[in-house]
Length: 408
Length: 131
Image (cartoon, rainbow over all chains, first blue to last red; front, top):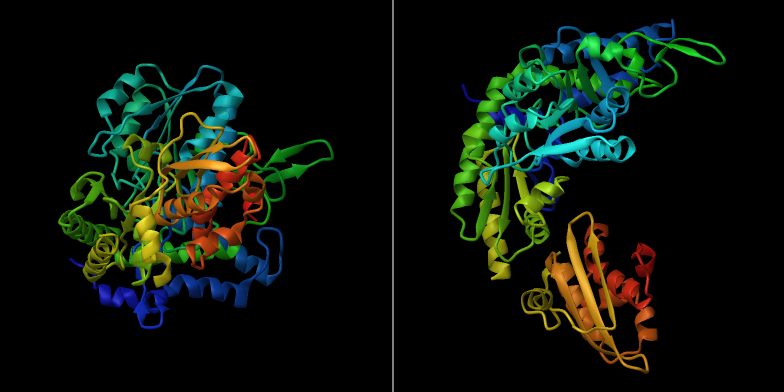
């Protein structure tokens, strides 16, 4: 079954926009943030027009409505990732904050000097820097699963690292540069056999693949709404209930407490224990609408469409003399094509493509160590989502030929 | 936008006159643009009376950052250091002959930032140097 892209594109008003007179937007930067369908925009608009009130404390009609909307969205997000319970779905600001929550709460309560945390060489800065901070503060040790030339994790080395009895294995489910889809279930199983806790950066996987918390058996799993058709400013930390219950609170304030005295407090139950202060309520409502939208289309169909377009893009890009692609073949990756063009800096590539309305990302994509590994300062990255078309890949390819001509 | 890649910029990017290193040198400084990973090192030779007698830059980056480094060094050779200290954003934009948005402005100004931090003998370069 293939998606009806013409119909789907009608759901995304921004895709109709002209970047400048006569030049329509070709949006190939969904890995940075996805565009938003009307249903999400309308859900948030409706919330502010009809139901806006603060949640959990009020007894008036609007407060009850907004609380119900906020909590219903959590239920639907929990179902979307097949969490056993919505209590295990903690709202955060984004994936970065979710990872930091684990680093500040779980890790500070459980890791001491000399304890080993295993990461990989393909991590986004958000799954590196929180551990660097803990390394200098606590003296924990970090080691890294290497990445092969083809952009895959070296699982044999991972097994060797596990014999050093790490306390935590934290890794990305899907690389935001290489597109590599890592064998998360296997990585988690091996970590558990070695007695380690696992944290998965799912920022790129949840928007594009069907993920199942119970089948994966992840201890912690982090993702953001804005990469999956939802708004910015809201994300999720999923965690196993026993772990979340054992953890100290992260941020203190309103809503995360059961009782406060002048000199003490008792924390609230899950998930509220980790949600201090007035949260992003309209954004939660939008997040709920986003998972409804994705479910109505079907994650399997979305993944199949992205696979088809990625395969086509890699094939077309590979034909261009001077283009070097990074990452594994299409069957092992999501909808990402990172590349360099001989003699032209990625920023210049992106800037010249922008002239034709083509939006790609250029830089190190918050994965500087990975670029260093491949000996390049930066790449250009085109990425695809459910609304991407083969025609857009053709525009990209034509645009790259124009860049080559200019730099001749 | 079409102006952004004027022939002169592409020409200075592809065939820079002042790319390289100076050994020995009197002043050397290097810095990155953390957003893009652009890197520029500038070496200067300075005469006893404070004139820039030779200058080279090394590094990698986009056409804007590399061309502006080349044009900048071309413009300061033979000039007194006191005059180099007075260079600012406008001086670089004048050399490039283009208008730039906030993101690409950082690319264009990296070389001036590195140059001035070196001339002032600073430990770290700051954006204030190129205001």
